[in-house]
Amino acid sequence: MAENVRQTRLAITGVTKRFAVGDEEIEALARVDLTIQEGEFVCLIGASGCGKSTLLRIVAGFEEPTTGEVQVNGVPITGPGRDRGMVFQDYALFPWMTVQQNIGFGPRQRSFARSEIDEISSEFMRLVGLDKFADRYPSQLSGGMKQRVAIARVLANNASILLMDEPFGALDALTREQLQHELLQIWARTRVTIIFITHSVEEAVLMADRVLVMSAGPGRIANDVAIDLPRPRDVASPEFNVVRRDLARRLTSHIAPARTAVLTGA
Amino acid sequence: MTEQVAILADVAPESPIVLARRRRRTYEAVRAVVLGAGFPLFLILMWHIAVIYTGTRLVPSPRQVAVMMWDFAFGGVYDDAFSGTILTHIWKSMQRVYGGFLLAAAIGIPLGLLIGRIKVLRDLLEPTISVLRPIPVTAWLPLSMIFFGLGPNAAIFLVFLGAFYPILLNTTFGVRSVDVRLFEAAAMLGCSGSAMFRQVVLPAALPSIFNGLRVAHGFAWILIVVGEMTGVPTGLGSVIMDGRTLSRTDLVVTGMIVIGALGFLTDRIIVALSNRLLAWSPQHHG
Image (tube, rainbow over all chains, first blue to last red; front, top):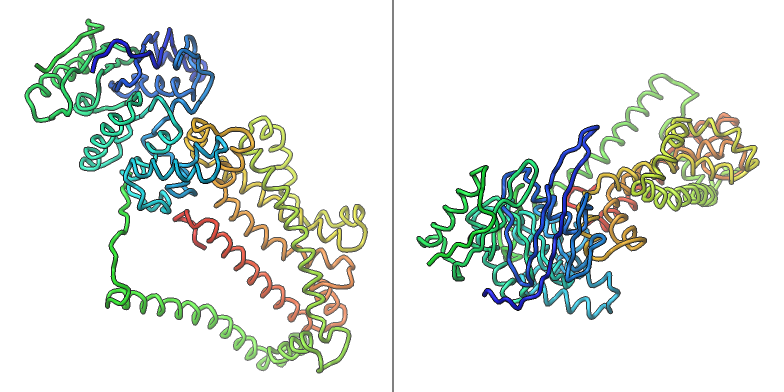
C-alpha cells in the first residue's frame, strides 16, 4: 500500500489561523505544514477546540488562512471548489431536493445534459445503495441514508479529495459501523483521497493509513502516525489494540515529544 | 440528533389495519367540516334571534341579507343598480387586489432575497424600511390620491404597500434563517452567482416566503375596501360605501360576506399551492 510513486494531492504550507473575538485575538492554528498523497486515507484526531475543523474548513476553502497556502494538485486554492467535497456531520443536504436531485446537484452546475445528469446520479445512487430511494426527500430518510447521500453527492461531482468532519458522529453505533465499512469499500474502489475528522481512536485506527494527532492551544499537529495494519482490520485483534492503546496514550498526553512515529501491528 | 425511521413496510391495501386507518381519517375529516361549518351557522342563528328579539330596523336579518345576496348575484328581486352585478364588482376588485399583490410579490421576493444575502444592501435599506413599515397604509391614502388620482391606481398602490412589507420581511427572514452549511455545500459543488439565488436561496427561503404571501394576501383584501372607498364606481369596496350612503345595511353586509368568502377561497388556493411546492418540508402543511 505504501507506494512512493504516488503524487502529492494536497500540500499545506505554513498555514496559521487567528480569529478576532471582540478586541482579542485567538490563535486557532499554529503553523501547520502537511502533505497528503493521492489516495491516502488520513484521520485527524484531537480534543474539541484543537482546530481540526478549522483546518478542514481552510482546506475546503470556506475560511481563509491568516498566513500560508493550500495547494491541491499543485494549484493554490482560492475558495470552495468541486475538487474538494465536504461531508458535514449534519449532512447539509438540500431538503427541497430528492435523493437523486441532491446527488445530481454538482453535475447540474456544470450544465451537463439532463440525460447525463440522470446517468451520473443513478450511478452514484447505486454506489451507496440508495437507488430504491431516488424520489425520497431528505426528511424521509434515516441519518445513515442521509450521510450516504452526502457522500454520493460529492463523489458524483468528481471530487478528488473527500473532507469529512465527524461524518458518523451523529449516527448510532450499528449504523456507524456499517457506514465505516461502506466508506472503506468506496475508498478502495474510487481511490479518492480522504481527510476524516473523528473523536474516536478506534475509528481512526480502523479507517486510516495515517493518523494526525492534534493538540490544542494553539492547534497544531502533535503526531503523525502511520497505521500499517493490514486491511480489512479486525477491531478485536491484539495487534489492533496495541495500536489503539498507543494512539490513545498520545492523544491524552499533552506533551507529545515525537513528531513522527511508525507503528506496525506485526 | 434523532434518527428518523423510514417507513418501508408494504402493507396490503385491503388489510383490516389499512381499512381502520382509512375510516379514522374519514371520520376526522367529516368532523372538521361539521365543526368548521357548524359554528358560522350557529352565529347566523344568534344573529337572527338578536334581530327579532330587539326589533331593530338598523341591522338587517339574515333572511334580508340572503335575499339581497340573491338579487346581487342573479337579479330579479329589487331590479336596481346592484341587481345581478356581482361578477362585475368581483372582477374589478380582484384585478386591483391581485395587481397590487403580484406587484408586491414581484418586487418584495427578489429584494428580500438580496437583502437577506448581501450585508451592504441590508445596512443600506433596513433602517429605512423599519421607519416606513409602521406607517399605516391608510395614512398613505391622501398622498396616493395625489400621486395616482381618483381611480383604480390609487387602490392598487394601497394594496401594494400593504402586501409589500410582509412579503419582504418574511423573505429576508427566510434567507437569514437558512443553515449556512447549505450555502457552503452549494458553493463547494460549484454553484455561485445567480444560480445560487435560483437554486438554493429561493427554495430554502420558500416556506417563509409562503408565510409572507399568506399574510400579505389577507392584507390585500382588507385594503381593497379602503382603496375602493376613494371614489371608484365599481368594486366590492365601493358597493359597501354605496350601501352606507344609501343606508342599505343589507347591501353592506352582503359586500362584507362576498369579500370574506373570496378571501377564504383564494387563501385556500395559496395553501394548496404551498403544500404542493413545499411537499419536501415536514413542518409545512397548512
